[in-house]
Amino acid sequence: MEDFAAIDFETANRSMSSICSVGVVIMRNGTITERIYRLVKPLPNFYEYWNTRVHGLSRYHTDAADLFPEVWAEIAPKIDGLTLVAHNSQFDEGCLKEAFRVFDLLYPDFEFFCTYRASRRVWKHLPNHRLPTVAAYCGFNLDNHHNALADAEAAAKICTTLLQLHNENSGLRKI
Image 1: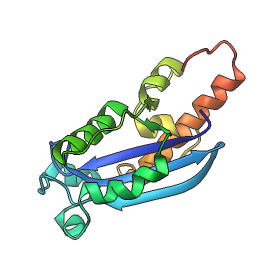
Image 2: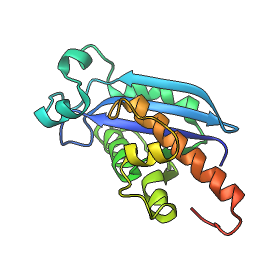
Image 3: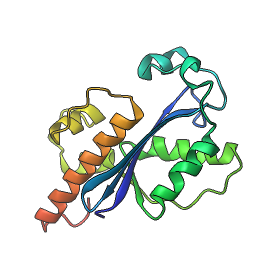
């Protein structure tokens, strides 16, 4: 899996469909070929205090943004055929599926790879497996945690490190 797209979503509220930003890092042959960051007008369009506190986004940032279908129409052709990588893919895949459901779009059968679960299997000695901790262990300084693009870049770095380890260690059959 040398080619993949690391993806991260931030949400405006507790609804998984309330995507307010998306970051995508496209990796081809072990190199970043494209970075995409887009603000998204969430649905439902309201921000809960705690979400804004985490990522710093509010209606001020996204009221003029495109809705998910328009943003996804731009991203989809660029990631076609690629495995999607996310740290805690359960959240990001859940957001994606819920946005597709809310906007009545046909959900493609994306393959997701979870760097959180893989890091728990491979690096059991880490004090925790939160994104900043694992990213730092892999040599990536995550200064802007909860910015969707920064988090996608961190997931890409973690995945690349895991893949290098896998390739170097024939005893690691499945990560």
